[in-house]
Length: 326
Image (spheres, rainbow, N blue to C red):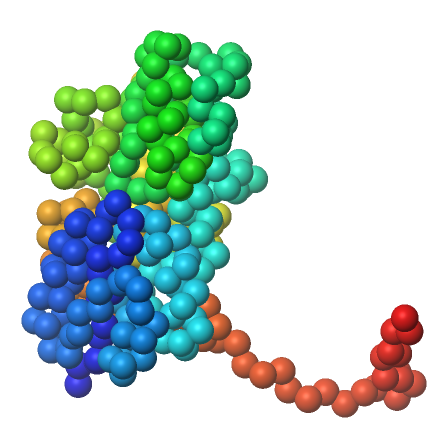
């Protein structure tokens, strides 16, 4: 028997159109597998729409802010509705790149050096830049799909790039530029499916390169088998460092000096038949419908395994705790 699945799509952010494409692809795949699918368009009144749909599970096909950042996941927790992808905390941490970088370093995972600049401080970005040098990469501190990403080569362009990036979430992240191959690793249920190298004629895999063509894909990456294995292990360590579950795509840079660095973890990556995670899965023998089914099977909640603590008798000689006296 198929499940009653609500596919959450659309949303409030700048990635709404990409989410709608993801959602429609997921709907078609789940219907082909015999599930009863309801389209749930995320926006005002989402809680009422979810209650009215009487679902068994939610397939989250949202991207970016107000969808991938833990807020919708929190709502699903309150509704006690199992959902696909990472939980509240992991989603929030992965979306907030500066916090994710701190955790990467805590787990001895190399990530580019950088700093953050608030929107109101964009005019003094150069004073904050210190010895980070040029070129550098400027991107929104919280966001996805490389919206607002820019490679800055001249000091005079830094303040403008920071101002543009901080339009998406109010803060920009400035990172040291690392030259090398851009590699992304697909993970589902804590298992690496494979990896793919992305080559573009542009500097940085930005929004246009992702969605307007011009990129070339090499699955597996054009690296030695040993190095591919190391890159995939690094990606899995980043996934675990943030406490992710379900599907994710980890983006890395493999530099010409043999150093591999983690850029970010995408907890709800693009998910159409031509997106990177499905490309990687197809090479691993999972077609799009089968991949969608596997992700659905992993749906759960943060509190799904929490049970009420059993009563425990007080040992002899141990009194009840004293009440604090104010």
